[in-house]
Structures are given as C-alpha cells and as structure tokens.
Length: 118
Length: 110
Image (cartoon, one colour):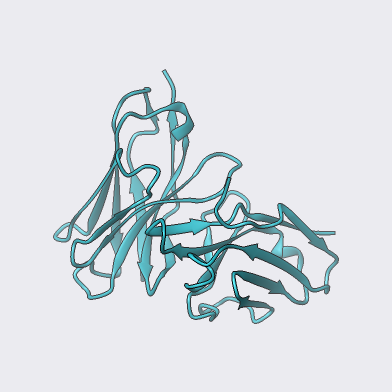
C-alpha cells in the first residue's frame, strides 16, 4: 500500500525559507524509474508542478521557480525534502507530494496548507 | 495563466455525456502523453487517466481519454452526481523541461 504524507510549517513569514518533508511508504526511491514530485495549489486555483527527484538522484525544477527550489532525498528514511527560499504571500498554497512513475502522478499525499503572512 | 487550456466549467444532467478539452502545443501535448486528474471538493487530486491512456484500478469505465495533435479530451459518459469535481489535464513540456497543467474544469451535474 502506497502512502505519502507531507509535513512542515503551516505558517511562514515573507522572505523566510520553507522546508517541507514528504514521508512515504509502500515503494522505494531506489527502484529504477521511481520518482517523487512536489505540486502546489493556491486556494481556488490550478495545480502547479514544482520539482521532481528521480531514483538516480536526477532533479528537475519548474523553470519559473528553479532559483528558489531545492529537492533532495533520504532513501534510508523514505523521505523527500523540498526547500523554497524567499517565501511570498503569493506562495500561499496547499503543497502535495506525489509518487511519479511512468510519467504520471499515481499516488498523492493529502497535502499541507502553507500560509505566507507576517 | 496555465500552459494547457481547459474550459473553466462544464455541466450535464445525469446520464449525459460530457467532454472536457485540453489544448496545448507541439512542445507538450503534441509530443508527449496526457494524463488526467479528478479533484473532489476538499480532497487531493486523484489519477483518472494515466500516461498510457488507461484507467487505474477502481476508476469507472465511463471515463475515457483521447488525443489528437496538440489537443486532448476527457469524456465522461453516463454522468453521475459523484462526478461533480474539478478535472485537470497534464503533460510533460519539452521546452520547459517540466510538467504543465491545465487551469482545471469544474464539472457540475444539473
């Protein structure tokens, strides 16, 4: 049974750095072809893909946010961490981590709402 | 402004067929597979049609996907009240080196 769970602060101040952790079970990020992505959704708005990390440690980032994002993994803990620097109120969103396999997002976490406000 | 274009809303009565379009370009839909997601109110999105144009286990066969050129479509036949949700298309974009989503279509069952 595949599960993913996002964790991190619910509230961050503008200019701060956000660190989110995705803890997963039911699969291994050492398996060939396995990837984990982060996707966010501002309230009432559309989904936006942020970043992806692959089993071989290849990393891909949203072109518009690449200077602010860092994705990493700890395979021993079954965790993927996303950091986003210089947070702004427009970054207020629900952040999802997803298992990414064969080019689609087949399992999603429940999401974590992050509000950026002073 | 989303890279993939979807109509903001669609509606139908129970039993009707509803089609949602997703328009892209040669760098995304035109050269890569499309996948679709259903998001019920207050919940996380769920994979509805995968990159192989298949339905994951548990997805009713009234949902189907198709693609032609730089556009794709999701069809819901035999619309049911539980199909009221937001639907998103997605595809890899070769120019952006990342996935792009549509703006989402809210389906209402009248």
